[in-house]
Image (cartoon, rainbow, N blue to C red; front, side, top):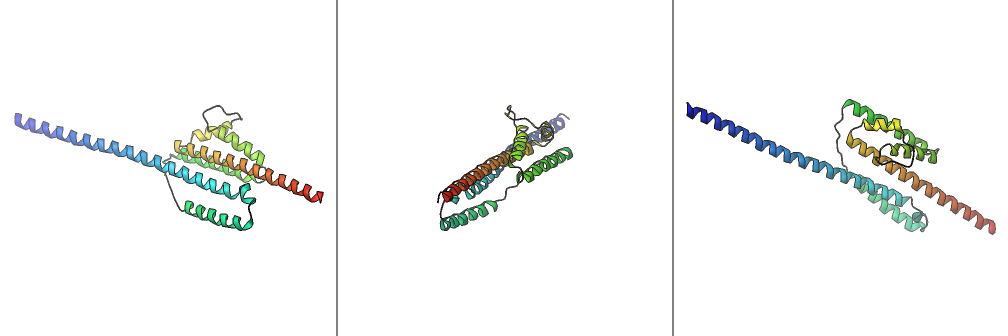
Amino acid sequence: MNEGACSKFSRTLSMADRSGRLLESLDQLEMRVEALREAAAVMEQERESILEMIQSLQNSQEMRNICQGEREELTLTSNRLMGRTLSVEISIGTIRNPQQEEALQKVTSIIDEIVKKLLSDMEGGRQQLLALHAACVTEAPPVPIDQKFQAIVISCALEDQKKIKRRLETLVRNTENAEKNIKIMDHQKLEDTKTNGGH
């Protein structure tokens, strides 16, 4: 009877031990999964950064100031790099509940509407983007916060919140660069007019 009890006790310990080892393996795998997702997120940001830099170079003043032959050659190279970068596909799925899904759709729709308006009102659109971006940062921003937008963003999944912030930062940078390019081109036009008028 005592032997049977001891045998049963030993089996129980053995099962608990096996269960503990399995749990430990799963804990280690969970850490690796998180590390994998973080590495993929870093790669995704690098891809976005490279694409933005290529576009910035293509639209830069330096590209306009070189001869047509060189410009064509550099454009071909930059287009090739753009194609190779776009061929790298990184997808990190985010698990969302219905409320988070709805919040993300609302946020995306709001940003998309402002992007459409940029063509007709660059400065007004930029100010709106700054107000949206201010709603996504923790430190006190120097511009008014769109509190309605902030409430929707808070309802989004944490990973989506980071992506929303990144998208807004990219859009603000792009509008600032576009405004600079417009001013440079306008200034050149004025200089050309003065030169032609002088002749």
